[in-house]
Length: 426
Image (cartoon, rainbow, N blue to C red):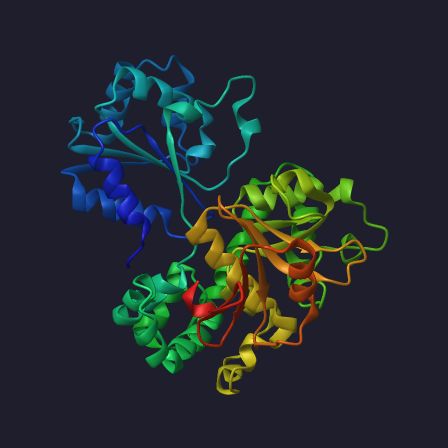
């Protein structure tokens, strides 16, 4: 299965001064498969060590973090000699033995010839206790569910993905109907690797549904298994209410939907746990679209999206026959899936912080606002082009942005500083 991040892995390997690499991402997004395949294709040997419930490795790293001692212990554990630059050392679920994180500084400073990749499913600075994480001694990449382009390639529609990458507007417009058809499929299937692989092979929507159900059940089990003692019920409450929150016209997270009288301070840890596990994206409101955007955050107002559009569709009960009803799938549930898709694509492709904007009265809302380093860009998201919509017009009149973007299903067009971008081009 093609993953664009493989190109980053190759660049990392070819850099003679590379640091140990950490790949973050939620469970079930394909970290283990990706790294093992990368190891088998680019190294003579791969030492795979799953640290979860691994008492031997926990004991090994509980002592001093001398590199020579650690390598000898890993060789004894795995049963063969590790050859620098020819052997990939892969630590999976590294967050379960935090001292492995701390050892990476020693590997970088004292033995940079060793090639080390760690997979991390939950990132929480508190796991290091009083010791500091050696962030300057590691490189970090993040793996998300498959993007729409990766989905197209897996579906053997490389020519569609290539046209998008090359921004070949003529070819894109000629294939508009096919893009929309596969975008519908993606809205249902989503980007979880197991679901995409199944759909690519069998084209069976109902088997995809079963896979999504199993993935969601595994996340429920992870909440019970890995969350701090006593807060699992609150995490489950936040997770389970996301579809209801997002299917509202106003998608701001409302604590009262959890239970009457629920207070933010009682659930803030639960929200952060879902974010740290990669299961939720938090989009904060800004009061004024001025640099730096984070300085204008409203800490009490945010939207919370789950990890994947296909999983959100499952949680909302999206049925396969909806895909036959014209383009209705893009507008169902008050366009919750459409906003989820746009956020998911921008997060995976851009690596930039995303916000949303409302004016003080809440009457005018821009779904997303980003700073691309040169401009602050408002992004209006809608299944249909609506030139009568007031929010973007009001925003542009007030703040006069250099550029504004409408995301919908119409063809690409730029006019008077407003770009109309088909959502499949993100």
